[in-house]
Amino acid sequence: MSILDFINFYLVPGIVQGSVYALGAIGVTLVYAIMRHGHFAHGDMATLGAFVALFVVTSLGLPIYVALPVAVVLSGSVAVGIDRVFYAHLRSRPMIITTIASLGIALMLRSVVQMIWGVNTESYSLGITRPHDWFGVKIKSYEIITLWVVVGLVITLQLFLTNTKWGKAMRAMSDNPNLALLCGIDNRKVVTLTWMIVGGLCAASGFFLGLNTEVKSMMGWNILLPTFAAAILGGVGRIEGAIVGGLIVGIVEELSVLAIPTEYKILAPFVILLVVLLMRPTGIFHGKLL
Image 1: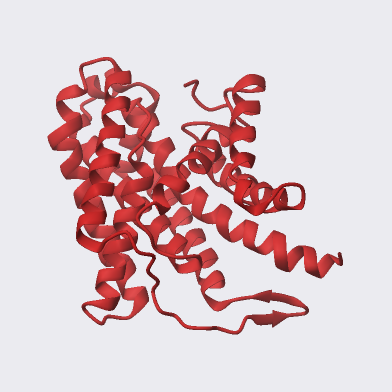
Image 2: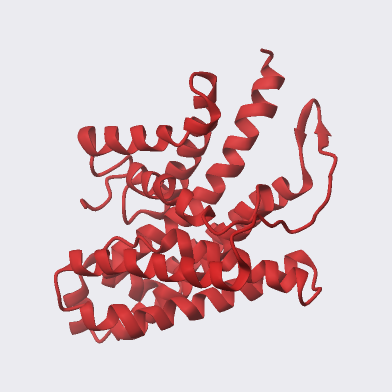
């Protein structure tokens, strides 16, 4: 196998898939950093975002990349609504209860998607596209767009968290919620803003997953394990860790098909998750302990 074959068949797909995992992992790490609980509905919220984008494209006839901001806004609003209706009254209870409740939300969201759109595999109908040839490296246009948009979203989020009033409030609540409350930070508004961002990131990850593969009702559930593995590998609560973890998981998952059948490559993130929890539970960037 030549170096170009390695890049085209394993490295490029791994980076693209890892970018999708990174978006999801950032959402997972924000939920845990602010609300202190795991969120098993994360994958199915991504599925909802992907199908909302599909509706905008196929039913409303709008361009595919116009569907992304629509899905981001709607999924963010749904995430805020789910928090208000289901999670808010559990905030004073042990966090394991909220984590278990999120599994029920995942089943509910998946059922809603299946009732509205069915269980058949769909696509955004891009048709057959020829990849661009960059000195032997072949990259499709939507793969390039995926990488650029993911980079843009990450930079925007990082600038928001470091340079804005509400971004600093989110960081303060992540470090110490009680002290943040004593300093006059409205924790309820911070939680609402966090869910809006998390829902938007879920929609973006689902959209780009569907853009690069296919849109189906189980797609979010299938990326839940790699997403959590990416967040824990990088360090829960660390955005830069989620990015690095997502890329590592994506690349390792693609490389695993060199040793195991393709249908079993989901074992790769499971092994990564197991090794990290046993050897370095704080992850690469020393995040929060689960």
